[in-house]
Image (cartoon, rainbow, N blue to C red):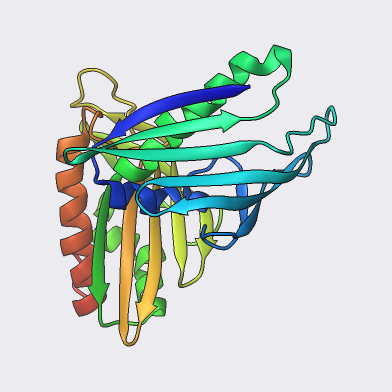
Length: 275
């Protein structure tokens, strides 16, 4: 069966292709392997029951990416989709890009609708949220240890202030930001890699000033990735799911820009808390 779905993205093809190759960040299964390059092999899996080994067969920068499934197994029913091709083709449209994703391989008769749903979810939700979500970065002349310490132990000094309660340092810690009458959100730490990466999941939210959906932040994620080059450390912040279609996007993007590039930056570089 061949199923194709399309999505238009407000980004140039170069940016879209670079994000496509960063499969570990948006593909719905766990990714094992190196960054996608011509001939590279990688594994996609979900727990112990869903596994595939894949190989990049076409790699045309800014144009096309294809991989072939060379081994596969779904233990629940021994379904095997070896020989399947997954392809992404990019077509420039002014400053935008049309992305076409095609699954070309075996499908059980009773799973055709489910396959279409999964393909649509993968491209139109997971990839779209990854590439269009709000981002902000800062570079400082500080160690990654200092940066990570500010991101975990000193959150109240750059975000939340006295309205922050809870714990912010360890895996599964939870904390709440509550500005009465304006903003409430509860975050759980779902990934903590010292001096490298931190991810929060928003498990509850309410923004009183929104008209349509006051829980827009719920189930979104905030990630902080730390990279070093020489004596400098860069923090890449992404609010995954905070996309332009959200009612809160404009004000939240403005707020995050100030929080990351002003409050967090000055705390790291000058030990100057905002609160």
